[in-house]
Length: 292
Image 1 (cartoon, rainbow, N blue to C red):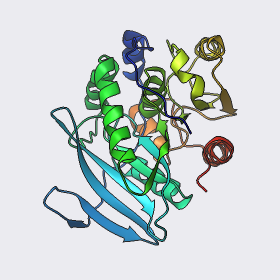
Image 2: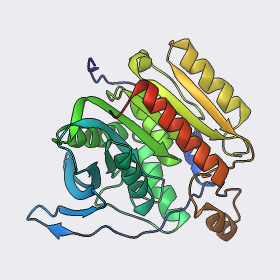
Image 3: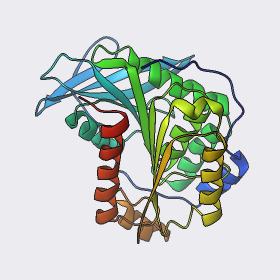
């Protein structure tokens, strides 16, 4: 597959509107950590059921980032790589769990760090501050996604000609933004990510896109969806848009219901939608981005 070049672009999301929106958004994850044997670089490694995980320290300029690589250790074949972008709580156990699931499907998956030093927060105020820094600085977003891209592509387990990204909530928005800014991804999947103010670009023509949206998500309006589809069609970008009846914001995360009650927010886990969206992702990847 021919690789695409990275070019500079204007920020495709209206940052003020997004930041105002995320001030109300709460998803859920726990803060458990992965441990294992270490080396002088601070990297660690462990294996479970044939899936090996590695804690990877990498850089974006002068910023230290910490990600988690997952791959099937039973084969030495290079496999398509997928960047997993976390929710606004940071790179905690939830995106790592999804990265492990992708490795079980045959991909090399990298749970990337958008905040630096693998920072994980517990309050909506902290999350809003960190997410706002990324949304309001498009070049920072692009640099950190490119750092994840470069790190994953350099791994011997990765087929460097096939790199994609998936993301949840904040991560879904970041993944779509990165694609529209010229990060050379081949496929993108957004799970309940924000769409407000999205602006597509010609650079996305070679990227296949899947958006998985909760039909009852109060943070994604009908106008947001119409505008998103119009933007994609304007530049002839291939995309699929899936909606799940009864699903609210953060429907894929089992902790969302408890968090929604805690903060009195309209978010909840929806097992049916979670399983359906994961299957839609697998079908999408089988068609456009197969692991084998």
